Length: 387
Image 1 (cartoon, one colour):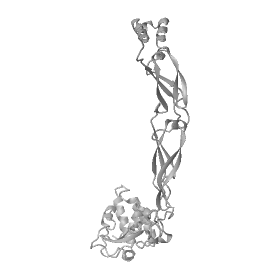
Image 2: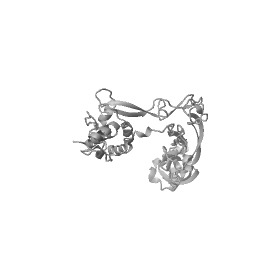
Image 3: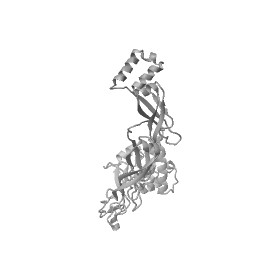
Image 4: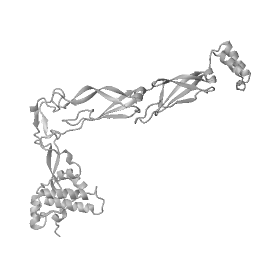
């Protein structure tokens, strides 16, 4: 039974080769087994390939239009599934179809399934975005509390000033590639069990650039980029946290062939502080207190990030008691509020007591310790002994 290849591709009998290609691309993408899991997709895909392999070849199409078949010996297997076709495309050998296909399936498959991005017009160059860079910056708690500007010294690749990024010693040293005639890609004919197929690949001589450099730049050795030292300023916002990254757009390495710069990521490393420990937006610190201050209470001076503050400690305060200084911590990143400062009291046990101090403590212990704290005269004598 004669197959209607025009109907299979949904084109008219006077359709141009470009119209056939376009129809094939749309249908191949729709019915490819890797994209369409319907039960009939594989068979439909075979029919589409078979129709395209006939209508895409001038000789076969003429024979088909005249006799209703592709040509003597055509086995109708031009629509083998895509994976099998790709495996066979690299095979040589005899017994395949003669005549030679001029329908560039390699070009069509590249465009349908994502390989077409490397194709360029004659003389075009490949622009690549520059690499992103990471810089680890050490900052202090004071920087976090009040914000600051930091200057970083770094090395990065930039567009070569000598050749302006071309990579050539002189402009005349840039020549059209002979291997691909400036297109950036070359075509190969392969004989397969389905006939001769034309495939397309990147030109090895120019790497797909379409141009070759006869004499490279003496500064960058043809790379178009050179390494330079730069001083870059970055603004550290208040409340920044350890490990956070700031992105400086366009401060990374320069792109090849005039491509855009990458970005610079600045990662915050907040070093240890001699007085404070950070927990979120709260600050913790330890303040020593004498034995008598803890017993009788006192007003003490404690450190803060912006100076000093007074803290009232009630009588009988135990060691490791935490007191809060509200709003004396670090600011939140959004500037909405501040954390608190937590002061931990460390009561110091007296050492190297004098004879008077020892007698006072001994009398305190023999009198029952806590049981006699209400005797003001005794407490007064105890205090006098330690002052």
